[in-house]
Image 1 (cartoon, rainbow over the protein chains, first blue to last red):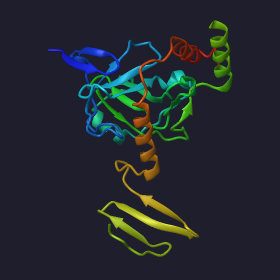
Image 2: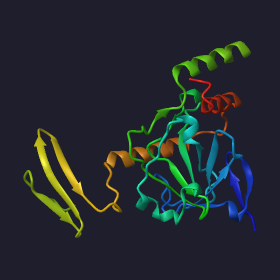
Image 3: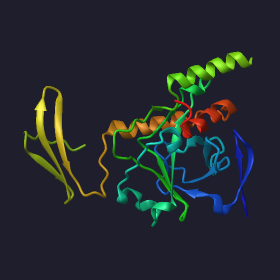
Image 4: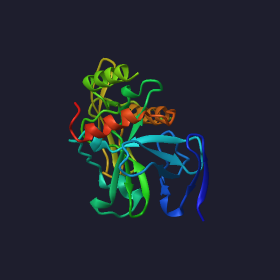
Length: 156
Length: 82
């Protein structure tokens, strides 16, 4: 039977059991939330990791390779033990976005601690990667921001 | 909290597999060496706290991100936008 979640952002959502993701250790900052699901179609640049238990809790996430094509996530194998056995192609990486209200172009992506999801076991965990990646990586450079601001002016 | 006094090059052992050694003391900075099995994550407390803070900030976002911003992000991934 599908789970019904009353989301403060998206209204009533029906989630199929097989679409649920389990975070056995919760998320840093939200240690008691264990079940999530993704809102948004695959291929959309920004999706939401939504709590299945709390309709008001959802974090915007994106594919880190969209944000930084040269991104390399090196994670300690043992860090990933909570998400069960996997081969590399079973893993999906997502990075958490901070989108300042009223200023989405200043959004930052946490490249230091991506969320790793094992699509086979449907378990996930937010882990630290080695390497010098920032917790607040600006998604858009100054040129992109300027271009968009100009387009917005021209369009209105 | 257990409080111990150690000198440079002295260590403490936690459990039977974790060793924390004082390598250098300079002013108010202490350089520590940590030897632990790979399965034990060792982080600066600030890093973990920052991730907690970022996650909480992330969760404050409303759902409205303009199509334009989303499109810009997609183009960026295709290497067409700086």
